[in-house]
Amino acid sequence: MIIRTDIRGLLIATTLLMAAPLPMQSAAQAQISIGIGISVHVAPPVLPVYVQPPLPAPGYIWTPGYWAWGPAGYYWVPGVWVEPPTVGLLWTPGYWGFVGGAYGWHAGYWGPHVGFYGGVNYGFGYGGVGFCGGMWRGGVFAYNGAVANFGGVHVTNVYVDRTIVNQTTIVNMNHTSFNGPGGIDRQPGADEMRYANERHVEATPNQVQHQNFASQDRSQLASVNHGRPATAAIANVGAYRQVAQQHAQSQPISEADRSAGRSYNPNNREANQDQRVANGLRSGQMTSGEAARADRTQSRIDQQVHNDRAANGGKLTGQERQQINGEQNAASRQIYNEKHNANTVRPNAVDSREANQQQRTAQGLRSGQETSGEAARTDRNQARVDQQVHNDRTANGGALNRQQKAQVNREQNQNSKQIYNQKHNNNTAKPKPQGKGGR
Image (cartoon, rainbow, N blue to C red):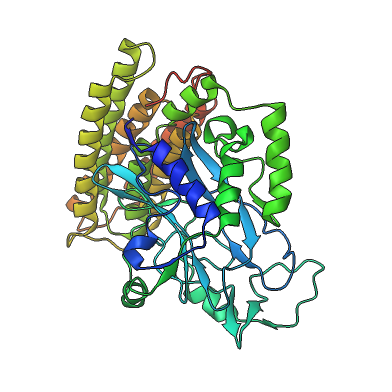
């Protein structure tokens, strides 16, 4: 794993931000915020599922939780209600984007419109496109009752619009937390491009403090909570300050935690590739033959990772990581090209079954229940089934006969049992206390 960041400069910039008034700035300058300059070769974990806490008082705007990066790796910053810096401004969430072999953080900002945030469905009004949780009306913020949780707070400026919720929601069943290959495949629209040229305001001091509290809370570390943070969301910054301080005093982040966090990676990149194949099969963008090629490629990479780890006491050297990353980049381009060529199929039950197996392997890799070696075996088996489906369809004018469907179903049942057994044996890829075993 390679990390490029100037932590000292980041801390200085944060201190200045908290001490000085927030300036108005251009769209490009708006990216120079809490997380700018961070480039990580480890994908952020999936977004946790949580319930929005009740609105603390009228006038607050919801800001969704997100994975941030620090000296101990990824940590979750809880979703929180905050007061906007001034009337008329809305929050554009930050997001991780995968470009050029690395995951870079694009910081959030305040502006008159909600701009592009990677197509990431953060929920509670941030469905991937714009914001449908409320709007400004005559200097007062009105809430969409179809989204906001009011609890016991009396709110007079309320409307209900479920249509806009449906129109701006990007389906993200896997809770993917980043944009780019292996993640959310979405580019900014015309309106979002225009909004990028508006004047923006950086995160408020309260928001910066909120992230700082989370960075000191051991229970928020991905390497500790494995993607399920102790505090996923909270009503206000002040309430979380008390929680974070208690956690920091009772169990401070240790050097062992920092080492484990920096190396924590439950095979995310491998899982992302399997998930992209699953998505391609479900949508019809990938044929069984194309999926078979992708599976064979991924199986070779997974096996290489397994062999390299076995030869090096459970971890990869820097050179091996670089080699694997290059091969995954090539595999990523292969999947992209096959999903965007002219070869498509109408989504059907056989392809959906193939996609389900791919997704189960991806989930096993992300959770650490499957090792790279186990994933290599399941990908090899899946490649054989996919290739058989492709060959049978080619021989029969594009369809399978009843006997062939029954045969494929039996083979998929065997694969399903294998995946289950591998996910429930004693072999795991979860991080060790000293950070060994991560790629």
